[in-house]
Image (cartoon, rainbow, N blue to C red):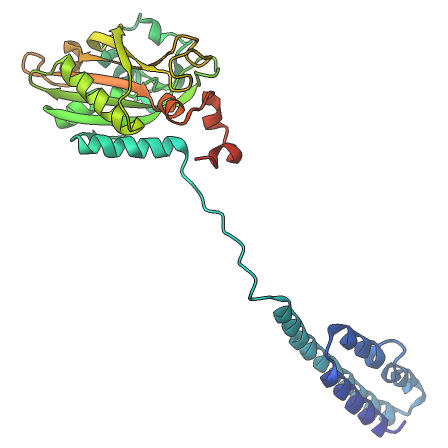
Length: 342
């Protein structure tokens, strides 16, 4: 077979490839020149009828032609693909909006409170969530027989504290940081301790096993209940941007004396009564009082020289009051539809 035949096929194929304007047309050219029924493929089938010398010469040239056509098709396919992709992009269309993340309402409230208390001269301190019984109970004037030590209220950990004399617990309140802060900084002292706490109890619209709490502590000379109520009213006014109606009633907490419960006028029903406030118009907000002398001594401070007040409240409940959330469980479900409202 004349070798010029192969040259003609190569010339025609390369010209057709160069002239192709669509990927579909290039596919047709590939089948025409390299397919099973193409002239080039049929010519290779005739190698068996040639002499050894002719077979070597013709076969070598045929393979070169086949490879040249295949390389040209591959290169042109890339060129056409890039061109068609560029044509498919309309640069005049508006871009797709990028969804921005957002802070959880608990984080928003915590950062706001930290700013408020910092402006009042309070340190913002963090502490361990896995706490020893000593700091969680005994140093806060909670003896071993106290009901709060019962398994129904506390998550106990099957491990001993580093001192090997106290068990470890998931802290039931942020109050252990009172002792840690007093031992670290002495008196006078102003500090708040936001953090996650754990209670072994049934969940409902107002209660969760895991929630966020904020503890406050102020120690100085001649501290009174008037100082306590002034601080409470100040930060609540900043949070709600209005004067908040509250009431103090006597309450017992082992680490303060005297102790008080602070109730807020229910923001969900405006005091008219609803399931969250149990139809009373009031929502229990915090426990507070003057620091017990035993606690001051546990913190290394002389109660004859210094006095102070402490308070603790659920940040989670404050968020519910602020944003009108009627079920505490919504805050931990991680439902984007709920969180995107804030």
